[in-house]
Each structure stands twice: as C-alpha cells, then as structure tokens.
Image (cartoon, rainbow, N blue to C red):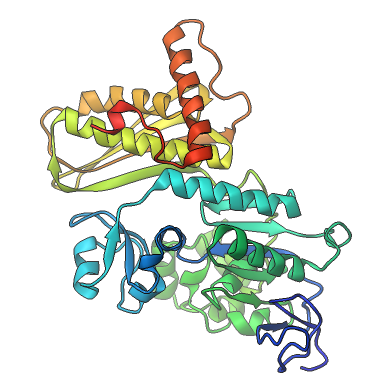
Length: 419
C-alpha cells in the first residue's frame, strides 16, 4: 500500500499512505493503486440546502436543521445532525418533528440555492467543458485529457475543486472518482460528508458483489422489487446470471443490468444529458380550494422552477401543472408553447390558465409546476409580435434577475409574491 500513489487532500503534495502529510501535517491522505488513471468524477454537495442555511446563519451551526414545509409538508433536506435522529429527505414533516423535536425548521429559498449552484457549476466548467448536472447540488465531470491544462491529475484537480468550494462558497462537497459514471456516483456516497472515495477497475466486481440491486441508478423500486422476487437481490447475483436469461426475462433492461453488474457503464458525461424536467411542488399545511390562494402558491413555484432553469441555462417547451386532491387523486395538465421558456412570468401565466379550469371548488393538498422538453436556453423566450406587454414583463424579470444576482435573492420581488 505504501507503494501506491498518494497525495494530501489539504495541500495536494505527494504523501505516503498511512502517514501524516510531511508538508502540512494533514491526515487526509488519498491513496489508491489506480489514483492517477481515473478521470470520471461525481461531485455531490453535502446536505446542500441545509449547508447554505447554516453558512448564512452561523447560529445554526451546531443545531439540528431541517429545510422543508410545515406540518403537512415534507423534508427537502436536513443537516447531518438531524440525520442522526433518523430524519431523511422526503420524510413527512410531522414524522421528522417527532424524531427530532428540537430541530430548527426553515422554509426553502430555492432561488438563492439556484444562484449558489450556478456559481459552483461555473467552477466545474473552468476545469472541463464536460460537466453533466444531475440536480442543483450534484454533477458528473469528465476530466479526461485535462492533465496538461490543469497541471495536475484529475484526482488532484477534484481535490482542489473541493477545497475551493469550501473556501469561496462556504459549504463542503463529497467526491467520487472512477472510470465510469455508475461507479463514480457510488463512490461519492461512501465517505460523506466532506469525503473523497475512489473505485478502480481492479476492485469493481468485488465491491459490487454484495450490494443490493436497489443502488443501481435507474433501477427504481418496482424493478428492484421484481429482481428480488426473481432471485436477484444483490448485484453479485446479477453478475453470476446468464446474460441470455436476463435478456429473456427483462429485455433490453436485462442486457443493461448484466453490464452494470460487471462494473461496466458506457454512458458518456453529457453536458445536455440526464435532466428531463425541472419542477417544484409543495404540500399545503391544510387543504386549499380558493383560486386566489392557489394562484399565490403557483407563482412561488413558478419562480423556483424559473430560478433552477436559469441556473442550468436551460429552457422548456412544455409547462406541466400538478395537483393532488384531498383524497390523493393526482391531476396533471400539460401545455406546449411555440418556443421554450425559462421565465417565471410565462411559466406562471401558462400554468394559471390550467389552474383556473381545475379550481372548481375541489380541495387540494399539493400543487406543483414543471418544465419539460428541455433544451439549452439559446433562443428561448423570443420577442412577441402579438403581445408587447409580454416583452415588457420579460424585460422586467431579467432586470430583477440582475438585481438579485448582485444583492441577493430576496432583494426584489414582484407584488404577487408578497401578498
């Protein structure tokens, strides 16, 4: 092991595995036999929303913190202190409060998080153009061929990125490094928070052998349950299965599972890939039926979707309204536009037309809005020859965006967002 390549994550100089750094005394020594041969990374911000809230309010530093809705809402995320009590993302808020009654609960500030995410993504894109966002707080990076440009190996480049984010943004990230996306994503989850884990070709099969099939990205709960019923509870069981048998049972999915079980993943890091929709939704504290109340919430959701779309430099051609009735029946209504948009005003006005048709006295417990048919924002929101007021509203929104980027997300708001 002492012959393996190693460096100090704190100062990036060469180090010896199992010993403190001779340069800075640091103990975070990263070592692996394939350390200098791997170039596919997955970066994941640690408890992203909660980390930003603690950064912005130092009094929260040592307190359990939950970001999410109130009594009937759900947990968006929580800090690692709250996780020790069993609190998890997507957990109903009433359950989280029972598990951690002393937790501080704050409402999400999506436009603020989106602005921070955009700044972090900019750091990534300085290192390589091959950055594939998965969400606001995580992304794949392909650092193949960047050694000469960066003057260091991909592993050290990612360690330097992690240090820069901590210093300039004030939050921590966890890094996974491997030879494909599947394993890089798994690696980033091994050493959280503030971690850096490496998975190479030499250990991939042995590492995967006893892992449950549910950890395979893309194998949802339904497929995982079916695989378990069929005798494939672990990835090792899939690896030992006959490929033809898997293909017969599961079609093209079976062939894909056979490759993944062997540690193979041919997907490229695609700057325009993975993301299919951008959406935001909220569960109400009490059922709502009045259009005026629903309209106000719709505007806030439209602003959140718009902020995320702008942070990704993406736009969508289809706007989707999502409603859940008090008896848990789901309604979705889609409207396609002539041109893609990323503007909150257009998202809101389009979804509002659908909302007016649905607000017939029915009591709702959830409302959401989303953008699909995503594409790069180039050419989005062209000027309208039919509605000059539309262009004025678009110009006003872009002016507000500039003010927010300079003075913060809450520095200016439209009147409808304050009612």
